[in-house]
Length: 443
Image 1 (cartoon, rainbow, N blue to C red):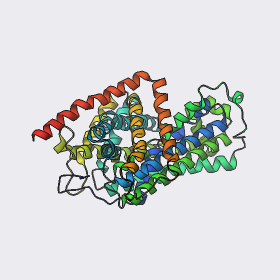
Image 2: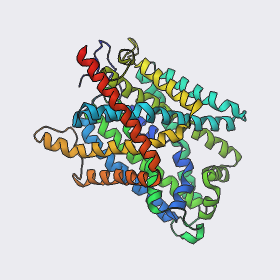
Image 3: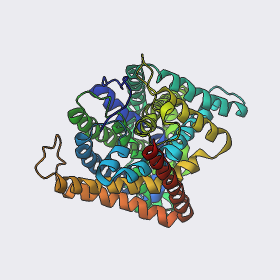
Image 4: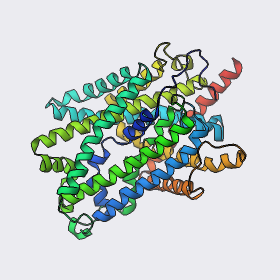
């Protein structure tokens, strides 16, 4: 697949550590710090909650192993958009990209930055009116950083990933060695009546694990992507799985289950203050802020690549401008600005959290299609060499498919109106696709 029609091309300069930090950094945001109580309440017991974190991670790992085979065969800029296009044709590739850039990507950036704004206002004791300016200011600063050569954004991603791992390591170590609760032995009635089900708990963890696939958007900028992309995806997801499970165990080993239920989203802050005193709470907040900044950097670094890849194929309005690469930095400046402006508008006028939720259904529909694509590619290209083969085939991709179908069915059952709206958003892409196709034919 041709990366661009311009003489200036993206820099294929990102190494293994950059790719790995993007996987870990775009997954670990704030969920692991704030979801302990909700997963516990839904699961009904500490042992079931830990099993939910572990099962969600294993399902995500099967998804990563499956995508690694596809991505190694298609090491191009655009990730899921490219996979869908090459497996199912231009229309379905366009729709998967359209859904991500029309709502999902900008809404996720806006949602994370809005929560970050709330944290910054509280941390610095500012007036509530500063929330939106701070949220927008952060994404603008990160966006500017990502307009320089991609090594700067990658270096920042590595730094913030290391920074967010410090509070995680502190929680794990202190919880394991200084806790005295029976993390696996408390029963449901010790907490209260369960507010959900084990399936709901697994669903919450799957959302907390989401985001790893965005590294594939940089397939055209990773050195030796046939080798490094699968390595980064698999090792990155494995690291997150271990971190999430051990953080949950550490907190459950230190804080009684009934207290976790009572504290809700304040559980991790309570843990930090109990373990390290008042200063511990401040340090944890700094760690969470760094974690969210790193997560934002990963999103801002990767989502504009989808815009660029689609514009380079002349599939979007203003394609010439959106496919522009700066001659010195080799970065998609216009695509990055477009995503940031769109996200800023969402912060000011919409509920970005709800907007990003609306697209979960369609995102997972495209995930399922790509997982199925592994079987299609093996049948279509039986004699071709695969740089990476999914271990445990066909069981591994089948588990990934079942996991994604579980999310899809859960979304239909819990948010049917949101599902219908998300389908409308995708449907809007049809006339745009055919309009651009007609333009290209008449050109």
